Image 1 (cartoon, rainbow, N blue to C red):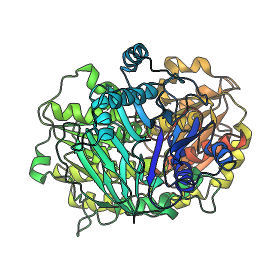
Image 2: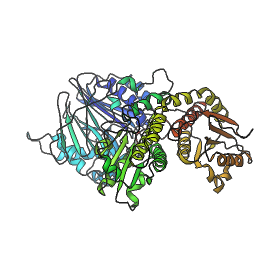
Image 3: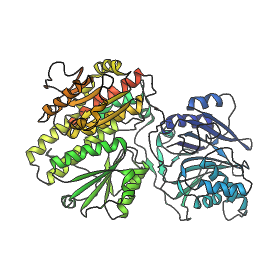
Image 4: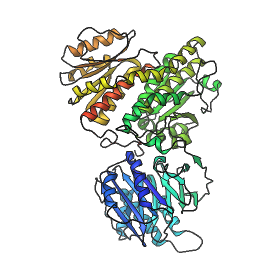
Length: 616
């Protein structure tokens, strides 16, 4: 979950690395550091806190070197201190290393190296790997046939258990970088007389749009003018150079106060991009170009399995509801983090889907690999072209919503909901959904962007509601059917960015325990759309009011509640059931955002969180 960047070229390295770290800061912001090679040695500066703190330190010194590395940390091993910040130097001073991931056998590594008189300045697993590289380097004979630096890194990694994305520099090999990955994303950016290694495209997009996505088990050696990629087993790799399809402006806030605010209001456009070109000519079904599965194969599927984590899992749960409703096919959702460990019995004719905005979520990637190991076809829904999940899946669907920088997902979530609704249509039309029903369904999906625009018009009203409820320490989110996962998502959003304890429940489950929490100090957010169970939802609301619990009701146009039942009303457009979860997400995103603002929270960088979870 850390952000890493390395640069070798003709420009000053420090300014570019600092700019890259700012763009990577959503991956971790406990501390940051740089190591620049100049005058025959490494100049290392590290500082706890945000990259801005590091930038102030760098401004005090002259870092003129054109070769260096930088890191922004999300702490795993060791507390948040300057010593534990990256880059780490080997105890002999020859190597500088940055690392994203977890070295699981670092303790035995460290014990062995202490016996060889290597010393340690930090509590991190990463420093153990840096010293192990130095150990192998000291043992390695100097020969013209091989690069001693590259060989030492390779040998050290053969002993490393766990996950890593690393970039390493060596004093004896100025102008050379070695990088490798296993489980943590790493990208090689190809510039004009310069090469860049980073954990995310956002760090390098200002300099180049030509990239090589490294695969697990690959190691890259590069200078300013050349690069070579091999596997750890010394097999040659023929790299594929890809073009990034978005530019640096897409990853900037523009006139908005926060990335989250920008991404909330980008949702109409994001939804249009998600569905563009994906409906049939007769407008009765969806088309997906990358599924690599024929309609006949799809027709034979008897069960679907969706694996994801966090927000993406909530989107899967809505998809489950829609596929079962419109395609009459069983669907199961599972936490990706649990799937590979619980050895669940699986049906034969099952098609797997994994969902991840970044395409790098380590638990979801592990679930994908486990399903493939068991002989199942796995399709991916993700937003990042070239990501690990996109490359390892048998096919899939790209979201096409552009970069999402805010840690709390918004536009990626509603895009996932839309893709889930389109899948329900696609499968349903193969089963028992009529042509006419398909046309009506497509018409409803096409209306989603404008319905979201209309829901966003409620923003000033929701901000006023947020001011009245920002002081509460607890909140409940309650919905039924396809809106129960939206209740879960609303609670997650509030927890993530405002630090208010919040829980999501099916509204009818209140009576089975959670109602004990109700008081005038615990507001409840209810989804109360039109439909056959509206009266049941109203009954649950009355149970809350009878116990003096404040009620915030999100209703669809045309719904009338008994007078005085709701303390606050938020009205969203009435719409098709397939679109309702998308539209209903908007008020809870806005409510969470504005409550966090009222509480003075750092919305884009909530404490203890990072955007892409790449460690178990």
